[in-house]
Length: 201
Image: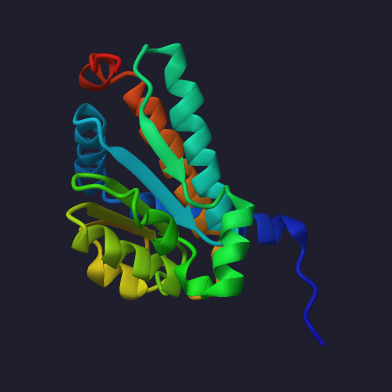
């Protein structure tokens, strides 16, 4: 029989775990990633984002933030695409080929040299994100990993990463961190002179 836990105690525990992850974010590394994203947009390249489950929701949220939020600050419209949003193509690929190919197949014929792919995964071991990251690098692009737990394979193979270690299976706080990173990046870009000076295409 499981022991009853008072909500106040659980809330404080959750908050502590979340704060620990925030403290472990390497902001200098994150700044390098932001520079990569700015360069991607400056060069007219596309930023792709992918993830599964809650991370898929974060990918879609990032797409919305980059597309809509920045319109209030600049006439520039970044080229960005969430590989999580086309349900018909995802189910077609998953049914006819493999769920492990749902992101890679969308990149084929679209991903160009200089493009950037952000892979969001708590474990870093989701096979479809690993395959997508490998494809991005092999195609002359850059892969960025947002990972937790022990980092997984995605941490090993990605060009850049934001790694916030936490207990395996503790999805909530690490998924929270990834959403926070989205808001940090987008809000920072809205105040970054280099980003704001990108001329509209």
